[in-house]
Image 1 (cartoon, rainbow, N blue to C red):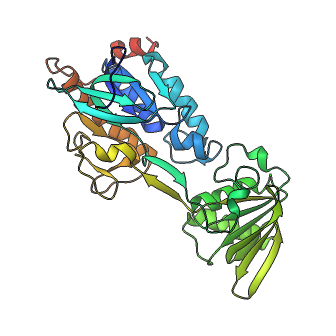
Image 2 (cartoon, rainbow, N blue to C red; image 1 turned 45 degrees about the vertical axis):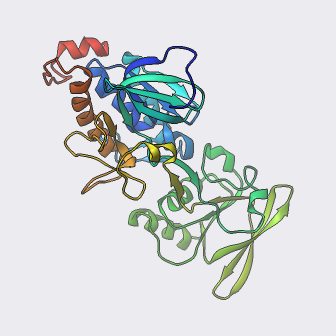
Image 3 (tube, rainbow, N blue to C red; image 1 turned 90 degrees about the vertical axis):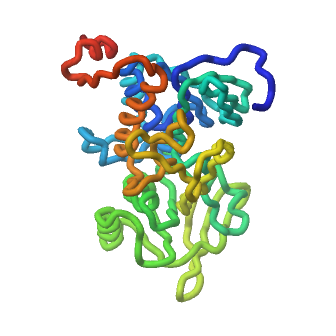
Length: 346
């Protein structure tokens, strides 16, 4: 472990790496079983990719919520875990992890924070992530002023001539959500087939057919403007090049995922994902668990609700490590006064 701690390490039952929705719900499941958690996240707030990349994007497959925004989901999770008083350490990345002879883990971040944890839970989504930049000359000159890789506030696109580049769920969903807000929305995709949900594609095609949205088959080849202020885009189509007016661009070419220091923790990896046991969601290293999008197992579905299930089973297994002498009695929150007292609802 690099460096020397000036202060004693922060002692905790569980250290959770990643404060996205799955990491947040893990706090709840662990708290019900009397385990205290600290969370480390490289971002400056809770919510992970949901809060960072698409806070206003609607989510339709969270149980009991016909629709909820990504930020709304994070807010509800934060309210749900409040009784357990989790401690957050934002703007930090775990850089070193070593196991002591007694089995506990010494963990260090790039901010010099040190932890001593009985269990480490990796809930880091896809690891560190960054949007893929399209190969368009000078695009970096417009990033942050006219070119954006995520939508933080829908109002930022109000009255703009918006071009969305891509054919996946993010591209089509944001085209539908921003169509009522922007002056005009144009989708540019290299072909007339999409990877997005069929229902969303059908809604997009209906808007195009009604003249409420534009669709171009081709690839953006040039940007026109000055001092970061976008004015036009040139699109290479099968019939040549066409120039269209544009003041904002949202390129959705996916994310580049990198595990970063996690790759050096001695875990068995499969294509930058962490294999786990589906009984406990423990990794190849005893005492280290992986839940959410960062893990892999037969039949894995990359859904938030799947991560919630994984967090529940992980907590059961973690309890056996944190309190090996304690008999685990499964209880329901609906009927257990003990659990209800923890939640402050008894």
